[in-house]
Amino acid sequence: MKRDKVVVTRRIPGQALELIEAKAEVYLWDSEEVPIPRHVLLEQVADASGIYTNVSDKIDKEVFDNAPLLKVVSTMAVGFDNIDVSEATKRGIPVGYTPGVLTETTADLTFALLMATARRIVEGADYIRQGKWKSWGPMVLTGQDVYGATIGIIGLGRIGEAVARRATGFGMKILYHNRHRRPEVEERLNARYCSLEELLQASDFVVLLAPSSPETYRMIGEREFSLMKPNAIFINTSRGRNVDESALYRALCDNKIWAAGLDVFEEEPIAADHPLLSLPNVVALPHIGSASIATRTKMAVLAAENLLAGLQGQKLKHTANPEVYDSV
Ligand code: DGY
Image (cartoon, rainbow, N blue to C red):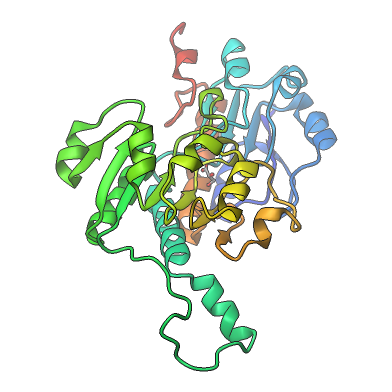
């Protein structure tokens, strides 16, 4: 019997690739950092039953149109805003994703950004490297306290909750805003639900963890930054599209807020000469929230398992569009 063909759009950890190769013919775009060119993707999906993708590929209607044999799309990510899920659903194609396995690692990175911006870690490291350190100075590189501060988490899903758990260890007061209240988390972590406006006005750290959707597009913009405290630190480890980056730049330049820690950008990669990167109070990272060796391996294996289940016509462990199973 002819084996299914799978397009794997990037080099992935060996364990995951071996799992797929045991069951299917693989076209691998074998690059660490360069995304599969669009024309190669469109050409390769023509006779493919599966696509194993990641956050940097756009899996849109054109891709689905070009892939008449497609049975499953599996992304090695918890976010699937790069995939036209409703187009997949119309065609009865399940979309796999990888929630859970990256929660703690992404929460760690979120907290690392929070600490780095508050205590000016990157500026301090540069200061030494550039030979600027003359002596201990009472006012040199003074930052903001984390311990005892107020953290406002926008989007209290798995990762938001894991960030809140870390915040309790720092004696922080926890506010959150979410689509729905989470009374159990409120009780367990002493977190208080509030409106977005109140959260923005009261928080020393505003942490954005909302998923990307048409509703959250640029949900943090000029008005939201103007509500924040002048000492506020803004952290985004969700998606760049959730923030108006020009408004963020202006808020930082006009001292409306104190600093920003960003792991995600509207355009990725962000241009090296982007104005935001010229500001010393911005700590910017190349979308590495889930990037520990162990976690990326777990994500890759889970995405492979989702893919193989889809090829075999079984339910995926995690499906972004469970409604594809409704009519079965
Ligand atoms: C995700 O999983 O959605 C991240 O952004 C990539 O780890």
